[in-house]
Structures are given as C-alpha cells and as structure tokens.
Image (cartoon, rainbow, N blue to C red; front, top):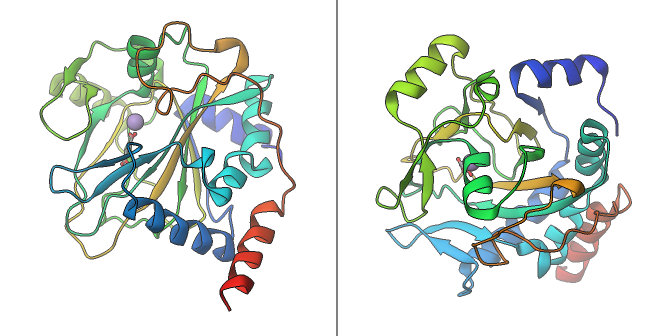
Length: 266
Ligand code: SIN
Ligand code: MN
C-alpha cells in the first residue's frame, strides 16, 4: 500500500494523517477480543490505572499471534517505509485500554521527548501509529492532536510521576496554549479499523473516559532502522532492542488468523 503525493504533503505540513477503516470488521473484532484476554492476564507487561483497570499492555506482538500479524502488516509497514525511505523496526508496541468509566487522562506531551531522554533515540525519525480497536467517539477520550506542532521541535518537558500510573514527560500549559493558538486541536474519530499516523514531535494527549464505551487503541512506534536507540534505560518490553527491519506478512494474514480462530471456536 502506498500513500499519494497529496497524503504525503498533508503529513509533512500537519504532522498527522488519518486513514479511516483501513482494517476490516473481522480483523478488528478479532484483535479486540484478543486484547481483552491480554488485559485479564497477570503479566508485568500489563500496566494498570491507579483504579486497577487496565491502562496499557506492552509488547503483545511478541506473545500473541493476532498482534504479531498486526505488527508486520503491510497496510501499516509499507506507507512508513515509503515516508522514511528505509526499513523500520518496532520501537514500542502497546494496547491502550481507556476503559469504560475509569480510563485515565494522558497529559499533553510529545513522544520523541521520551524516546530521546529515556531511550537515546538520535532523531525523531520514528512514526507513531494508532489503530482503533473500538469505535473512537468525541465522548470516549479520543486522542487529541495539535496540528503543525511538530515544527516546534523537541520542547522542554518535565517528568510527571504523579498524575497517572504512567510516568510521562509532559508540557506546560503556556506552551500548549501557544501551539494550540497556531494549529488548533483535532481529534480523529471513527469506526474500529481506522489508522492514524503522527509525527514523533506532534503534541498530543487525551481526556479521561467516563462513558460506558471503552476506547481500545493499539499504539505502535516504527523507528527507521538507522535511527536505532543508543542508550536505553527502560525495560526491553517497553523500548525494544531488536533493530532488524520488519518483513511484512501477506495482506490477508490477519484475516486468515481471525477466520481460523472463529472456526476453532464454533
Ligand atoms: C499516548 O500518547 O501514548 C497514548 C494516548 C492515548 O491512549 O490516548
Ligand atoms: Mn504519546
């Protein structure tokens, strides 16, 4: 799958690009079911909110077949290789729950801030991908982006260890206000299967979810192979150390697994 010139230009100007319904309902229903099983497990890779509800599950692509197929899916890998002009590897893989009623806030931040400070990533040549597993609505804590904020570069941030259960390098209110005055805020919404790509320096965050509608999104980070991390401090299941380029699977690999899984259950 290749991006059009128009899509590439939009990404370079705005810092994000949304491809609605890139994955079909059979594929996403299968992934959503598998995610629930992962959240129910007692594993160190599954991090919980202060309330105990699941917040994020790291590295599921390393132990779950469905997420392994997603992590090497050509509909996701090929556009990113096209943009970077080289092979990519998985820097981080997480399934964020934003659970019904209890899903907590993600403060305003840039991801490259963490990759640089905590992982020693040389450049923001890694792409953030969000793949919707539930319907993302204006009311259930959609991801909010500040368009064009990636042009501001790597901003000063402070390490917030208090607000949520997840330590994060966050931006101050004056900085966010200044950038929002310039670029506004967008919150892409839509059915399961939508894929959002955004620049490592794009400012983003999300509010809590007080609705009965969960908002599961897979967030993964594809790093250009030449931009591999130099001085990681976080565990390997958070910042991966396998820098080999991903070899994409067949386009129907995930669908075939979903069907085999359904037949086995019948
Ligand atoms: C993130 O920024 O890494 C996650 C944001 C979210 O799940 O809303
Ligand atoms: Mn982030």
